[in-house]
Image (tube, rainbow, N blue to C red; front, side, top):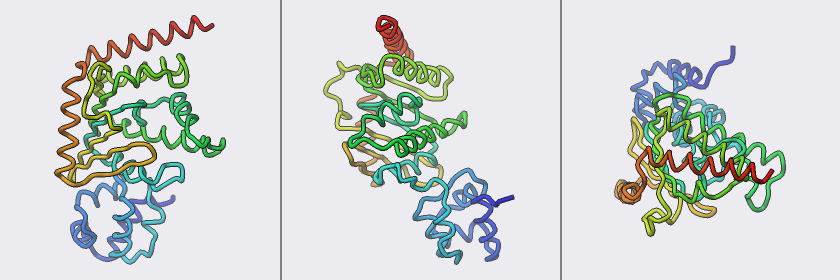
Length: 269
């Protein structure tokens, strides 16, 4: 049977006669992170994989075969954020224009990707859809990460893909929220101006590293790891959240919009 990535790491560590604590010290990582990589619960960033290769003398094996590395269909500016997203214990996301990627249905994701310019070929388009849907795996664990999504009301009113696609997408969000897996709040269009109108924002917390913030605009994205900047973005998020509808009214608004899409779809036929 082929070895898993974690087994490769454990074997290389034990060949050096090192404990997880010793490897963590040499690679400047936490012991819990090493343990989680070995058990397959986490995977290292490219920088951490390079550090592991260096201290273990494994050439570039741990870097080359690192799980979750770039697929070629994720923008460079988002790749590191995607890796961190899979390792976070708490995520707070703000959706300004589209439903956050890890909540998207296949039909909705396809419609979003079809709007890219220049338009992708069929093969690249398929890869992009699959990659986006893989992000939803972070919700497979029933508890971690804890996810809180704040969406501008414009997100649910914009008919991406048409009425049927939107009805399905909104139903999916409601199902996740009703199950308790995610918490969703809708920020009414009437809440203008609010401090998050500049773009997409994601806040992430981790078990063994400081929190980070990710902000994205048109064809650009940036990870902020400065504590002062993270706190500033957190403050903007909290201020916008204070203007949002509570959970149940938010779900009622999403259900009502889904119903409107279904009725519109029937009229079209």
